[in-house]
Length: 164
Image (cartoon, rainbow, N blue to C red; front, side):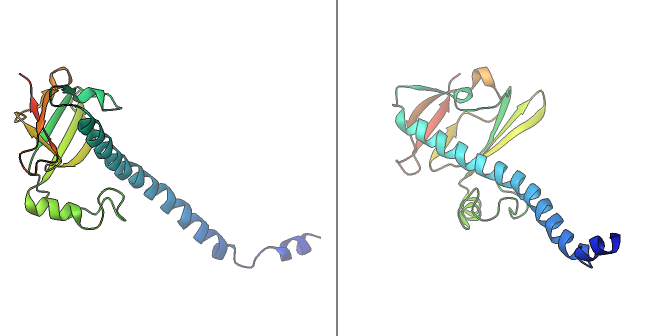
């Protein structure tokens, strides 16, 4: 009876288990990357949508658009990474080679959010869509209030000038 039960099992269960384990591991690995990359893309889209719907007389508060806790933000214009971005494949953040093109032309801006000295979020923007002024140092969340103006680079985006 035991022999009949064992004869039903595959002779090499590894042949069936290894692909299943590989698929599970890759799914967990890429799910985290996909979540991070698509979150960056969604943040950029939401920010652009909110800014374009506001008038030039309005004030923009950066904490109002973020969905996470932070106490400081550092805005780095003309960001030039030391290596090619391989963290966000398949256009999950930027389509095609757009990010590399932005880096080469000096149009990549990075927002680095921190809470109590620990980085909690990192978002990339096109400076021809959203240009920041007066942001040469880290900014407290309470002080991250900007005046909205027309982007001087291409007149279709916005310029955010830090209120002092």
